[in-house]
Length: 128
Image (cartoon, rainbow, N blue to C red):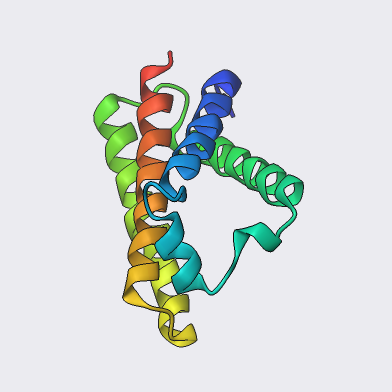
């Protein structure tokens, strides 16, 4: 299967940067910590950020395989939005319902993953 490794790497970096903004105190970070019941200060940053980047890279590589070598812009963005909202966020929603997590937490996490995959599709479609 043909994959543009640089585009997939750029997509993973975009998810990492988006997450840095999305989960910062200037966006949804404070609300996310409260709703998730975690204090990020009590964490291992190397494990969290390193692991997050590796997982973002895996997701970007597999999404690149899913889209194929040269997806159109409409396919990339449309499939990215659909994957993020209808596969990832919907799956989170199922888990959050059973775990009795708040709607606010679902919207924060689901919104991030919807944008994450939409960015993946945009980058993979534009990078030829």
